[in-house]
Image 1 (cartoon, rainbow over the protein chains, first blue to last red):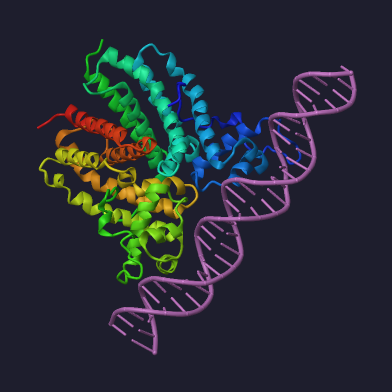
Image 2: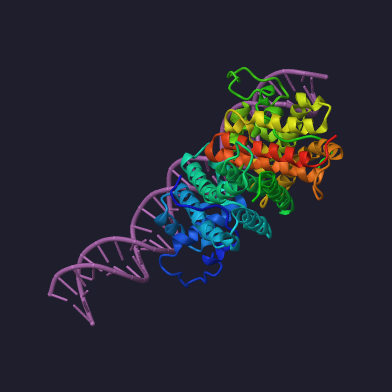
Length: 229
Length: 229
DNA sequence: GACAACATACCAACTAGTCGGTATGTAGAT
DNA sequence: ATCTACATACCGACTAGTTGGTATGTTGTC
C-alpha cells in the first residue's frame, strides 16, 4: 500500500482536465497536458466499457492526443492502467477532504456525513459515479498482478482515510466486540462497490441508494446500541 | 426479468460439467455435450479474466471443443454470454434450494442460515466463489443492453428467491419502517457483490468474510430491535 | 440418406506497439 | 542578446499478431 492518505471514488470531477472535443483541429493543446488528459480519458473510458474492451486508440481519441503522445508518456497500456489507478486516488482525495461534513465535531457525525455524501453522489449516468479501480480490478486480479496491486493500493488508501473517524467514534460511543475500525471501513467500501455493481445491472442508481441507506442504518444501530455520552 | 425463481452464485459446482483437460485427444466427448461444456467454460473463464479479455478460442479450448462446435450452438460470442447468464441462474438454483438451512422452522433462521451459507462459500481460489453475472455486467452495462438485461434477470431472480423468507421474518419479528423485503434482499446481494470486488483486490477472501459478517450482524440487529415472539 | 453435431481451414478487421520524424522549449557559451 | 546543442513533447503511418466469424468438410444417429 502507498503511504499517502485518502482515496477512492470521484464523480464528475473530470472537468478539471477537459477531455477531447474541445480539441479544435489544428489548435494544439498546451505542452505537457497530454499525460493528465490520457489518465482522465482512461478513467472515463474504462468506467464505461471496462479495461480490456477499451483500446489505446479510444483513449487517445477521448484525450484528444495521438498514439505517439500515448507511448511517449506510457510504455504500455498496462503502465497507463497503473498510473491511472494512482491518479484515481489523487483525484478522490480532495473530494473527500473538502466535503463539508469533515469539519463536524462528532466523529460519528463525520462518518454518517461521509455516507450521506456518498449517497448524494449516486446520481446521473452510471459511469459518472462508479469506481475506476473497482471496475478494473475485476478484470485484472488474476491476470495482471501489477494492476491488481495498484487497485488494491487505491482501495486501501480509501479505507485508511476513513478509519480514524471510525476509531474515534468507537472510542466515544463504543461498539460490539470484534468490530474494528479498519474492518468497518472495508465494509463501507464493500457496500459501495456492491452498490455500483447492482446499479450497473439496472443502469440506474435506485438500488444503489437503497443499499447505501441500509449501510447508514447499520452504522447508526452499531453505534447507537453501545453506550452514548 | 425472467419468471423463474432462484439464482445467483454457485461456487465449485462446476464439476457436474467437466471442463477440458479430460479431453484425451482423439477420444470424442459424447455428442450433444458441447453446448453445456461451452457454457461452463464461459463461466470459468469470464470469472477469471472478465468478458472482453476472454476469447472465443479460449472458451473452446477450456471446453475441449472446436470453433465449429461453438458457432454451431451460438450465433456469436454475445449469444453465448446471454445463454451463460441464464445458465448461471439455473446452476445456482439447486445449490441454494438444497442447502440444509432451508428446512429450518424460523424464517429468520433461514435467512441467517443463508448468509452463513454464503459466508462458507468464501474460500479457495477467487474465481471459484465470485459471480459470473456480476463480473460480466460491469463490462456490458453501457455497451450491450442484451447482456446487461440477462445479468439483471439473474441477479433479480436471486433477490426474488430470497425475498419470501425475509418477508416472513418481517411478519414475525417486525422491522423498522421503510424496510422492504426486496430492498433487504438487494442489500444482501449488494454486500456479496462488493465482497467479491474487495476479495479480488487482495486476491484473498478475508475481507469478503469480514464484510459478510457485518451483514449478518446487521440482519440480526434489524430483526432483534423489533418485537420478538 | 438426411439431418444434427461436430471439426478444419481460412479470412477480414482490428489492436498494441514501433519508428522516423517534427515542433517546442532550455541551458550554456560567446 | 543570440546562437548552438540538446532534451522533451508530440505526430501519424506502418506492422506483426490476434480476434470474431465463415465456409466447407466429416461423422454419427435416426
